[in-house]
Image (cartoon, rainbow, N blue to C red):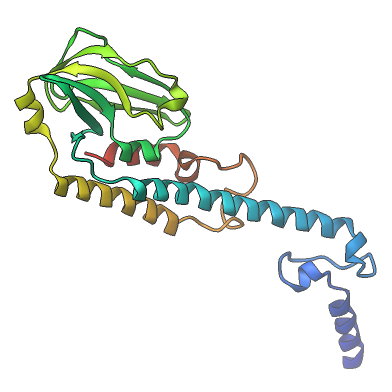
Length: 239
């Protein structure tokens, strides 16, 4: 009797599909005489693995691209770094370019529109001056001081990631200087951004263990971490 069970067990083992034998799937007996090259099931499984490998590569590319952008950003003495993700650059006495911190720009994806407060209107401290909208929602950048927008710089939204200046504003030089972040503060801000992306990279699950399998292909950071966390990241980077 034992020999009969052993014989059946041996037959069962020899009939296991290679995908079952390698523990990729739970159960599948070969019905194609182990002719994997001409097996439809084998082709389907290999295509699935190729897709997962591609998605793993895409996810790595998302975080690596941001990390590389951040590492390429250097402190620039000609730029006035301000709180709330804003930067300025002097044009002439009491007149400046207004822009978005390159550190924040490194994290931005799928931006659909950007709006700046209307011209010739006084902007007060902590008042919203720039709003950025994307597939993920929106973030607002508030002013760290009182100033007035003189003019808006016209540019296609697609170039935002390359062109950081969005407007020209007027403010008293001494007031702008008082709000300027020192180099040590900038370095702390930069390090915080790098740590954020490294933390994301270290906690990305492998495809095959989460709901990231299938569905919409992950192309952007907000898809990877979720919209709520993505907005929290944007709001916390340069504050």
